[in-house]
Image (cartoon, rainbow, N blue to C red):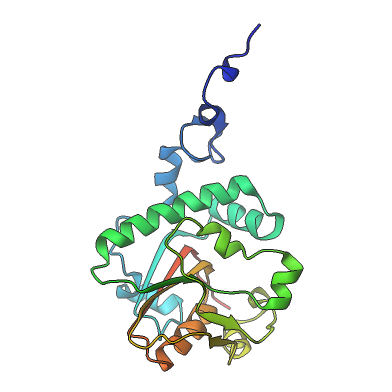
Length: 223
């Protein structure tokens, strides 16, 4: 007997990574995609909300836009990409990234000059073999990173909020001029905002006009 799935286009046979139903989308069905987008009905700049301002330290960022809270299934997908190089989870997160970028492009109201992912330190990149942030955001109009991570820091997840800031002192340098540029810095998860703000601060100190933070997920940090 000929199996039906051999007669259908391959994309029709992909199960959604969230609900496991067949989907014509890239491993994430339209229903689950919408269920993952926690902030899509809010203002595009989340720093205009005082409660979110108190959660993160992004003093040198002009804006913050995020797809979801750090919660199930987003946290599982992010960990799967970061530690296990999961291609299925990467595709699901990439669809979230594309959707968030489309909304941002429609609503931001200012020209963007540079869009780049936060880099890993060379030693961590060699050990892991890839930068999961670049994989999640691939397909966007990315520019070669304007930043270099010169300080091999301890993993931020092991530190308190105060120590995270100290851990990132002088961690980034620029490899090109950003004078007068509007910049979008991309991350996978923002917790305290220490890493993102350290990168934004370097840009602002070197004449960047505007720096926005964009991430897949936002997680409150109480320590």
